[in-house]
Length: 285
Picture 1 (cartoon, one colour):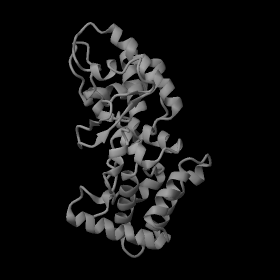
Picture 2 (cartoon, rainbow, N blue to C red):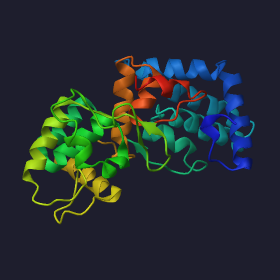
Picture 3 (spheres, rainbow, N blue to C red):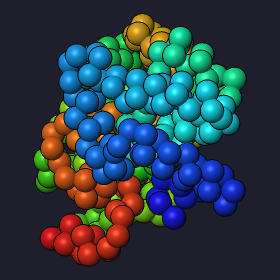
Picture 4 (cartoon, helix red, strand yellow):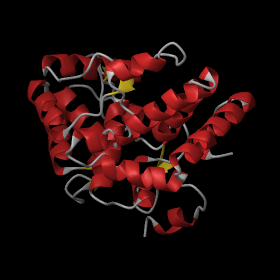
């Protein structure tokens, strides 16, 4: 089973796989070619070039719909799922999405913040929220930010730059998947956390807590991110949303743009490396 189809029921996998192959044949592409082209397109300044795959999917949908509406809708779902798995989501304009909205369950596309968005959020945030957002952006750990501890930070403060929150020669593990990771804190994130910890009057072990010193829940951080986005007046389209997971995608995109290899990106933010475990053995050396 292709990794992007994992998690779907057997019947859905069969339908999506068939639809995906219809798109490959129509577009004369390979999956590897699609990933490489999408990655390149997302970096381009020209909007039409960035929007190439959305247009391809739309053209394919219109062509196939004349013969089989159900197949056309399945193609849209399958290609969306494929690019979504690789953190390269298709971003259809509202009028485009309306063409297949009746056959495709409406979904909010995650809004991936830019560097300017991050600066705007940081400017309106208090010290704790600023520390959390910078940690999310620099590590890409999403909900696992709730599991980070003061000890993980304080044992490395002043000894490493950037700070690796994983133990020396080892890994942290994502709560949801158990995948290994070695998250790094940028200088700005580490400095802000240091300032935040000086304001704390509790002795809770968690790196980030609420006003009562209790461990933060992912829902609370999502609400915080949405509140800060409103305060910063981020230009988020109506059909998109922002949540803490968007900073995982921000990290992935920034790392890709910095030409960090896929294996190292996976190691840093805890995304399973396809194939062999060998890379994990040498990653801590």
